[in-house]
Image (cartoon, rainbow, N blue to C red; front, side, top):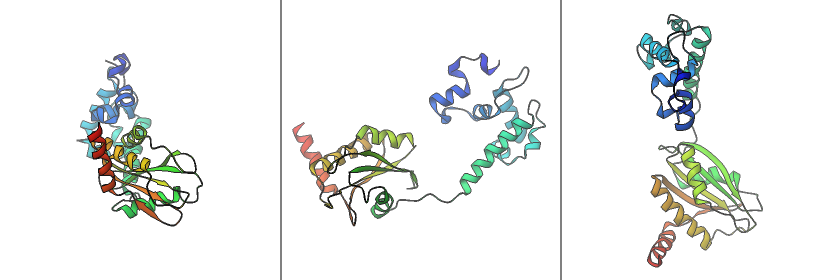
Length: 232
């Protein structure tokens, strides 16, 4: 059966777009690269033949394009696409190591350039992989001279969309004060709870000024959390 004759929900490309690449088998991922099969053989069938021809995925990744031409239905265009895809992966793996967060100071170092020198408060989120490698660093909100919102749902959604395992946030105080407001502490408490709910590790919430930084103490945050629980 041709791939285009399958229900849309069963087609590899459509499933990749709706459910992500992790939902596809190896042959289905390769079928997306190949794009099509040939008479009597679908792209998925052809992909299975290509993998079998090379022994396994490791063998396929190390194969030169001309070796793939020995498989019926694979022409220069298909062979080149597959070889290019695996070569891009090797380049990415050999590229410079990501910046890594191993301490609160590392988080401050990464967030400060996006916060210092601004007359309005901004909220920065830094997303990390399980080993602390930085996946994303971006400004999430920008508010007034003395406040900005901390959208809990948007923060968590941003981390999950990046495939992150941990995250930290930071915001600036243009006034120069390092003292957290009641709203800062409450937002930190909610972030900790939200992270625990979805299995993420919350690193820290920092206040950054033009010359210094301070983490919002967990002891203060825990007190707020307990008080909220007692009154709920």
